[in-house]
Image 1 (cartoon, one colour):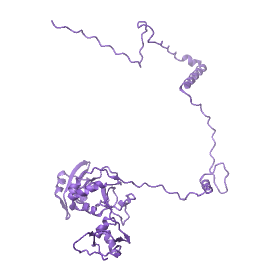
Image 2: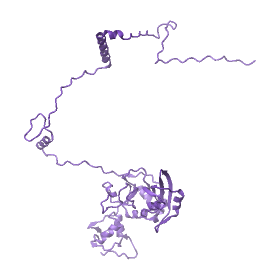
Image 3: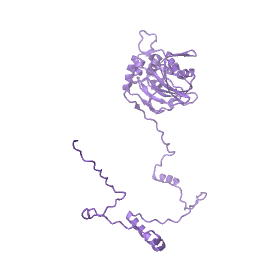
Image 4: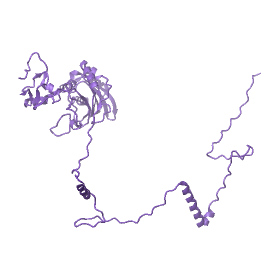
Length: 401
């Protein structure tokens, strides 16, 4: 069976590069290179042009392996840290976003790019068609950024960006920019745009005389960064993704204002495992005893073998006599009384010079006879004193005569 001609009429299906990208094999550009290298075949016949149109991937092989049908599209949120490249590999060996992603994820493609020093929300998907749809400026999906810049700018200058601006022959579309706050010599600016040209935000702010020191993407369409920790990734639930794609058919503005109620699905992060032991444990008991004997240090009092050094023995200190056993409060009180008695007997002058003890107050019993026979009670500081009775006021007057 010969490959279908790209000029067949009527045109049915899609280009093979698009189908393979949707199946998660590689990006379209990479698939075109694979076709040029002769790695893609249809029913055993090597494909020569990437413009081949196919209704499905039946009979298509890559490196001799059949290609499975495309799985449902999946969308992920990733909080990209600063200092990572948004690419699969770097010739210079610099770290990329794929070095930060946990293992076990499907092949993910970034939606758009973030510069090396730009951080924030980066969408990643398994569907090449969804990736392309989100990236196109004609779709109109909004992107929001927060920029910290050094310099002076007015709100009127930022409002002029709504009409677009041309810098060095490059035309940039409408940008909704607002001055958020000032912190010393720096300003924080919020920007919302619908296209993602290379270094667009930085070039526009530099054209206004500002020097950007930090740039964070906070939103892409209806997906917000929120309080997501740096370097973390989670997955948008299929229910929300289906709603988003339906709203995207109506326009990027409607899709960007979509309210999603479901919480993204958390992705387990890789935990660094402990290093494995260098040698496997011994199989029998005799071998294990030999291993333990080599690991346990020799006793200090054993004689040293030939050529083996022994550390000096530690000095033996006399054993400290054990103190008295613990006893209760009553026993402690009686012991203090005995100690005080012995001290007074040993030093009579000190006992005579001591102040005489105050006579004990007579104990007052509240039930000791009638009220008039009771002695006057001495109120102590801890007693609750009765409140003084209110002074009797003047009697009620009768009608005025």
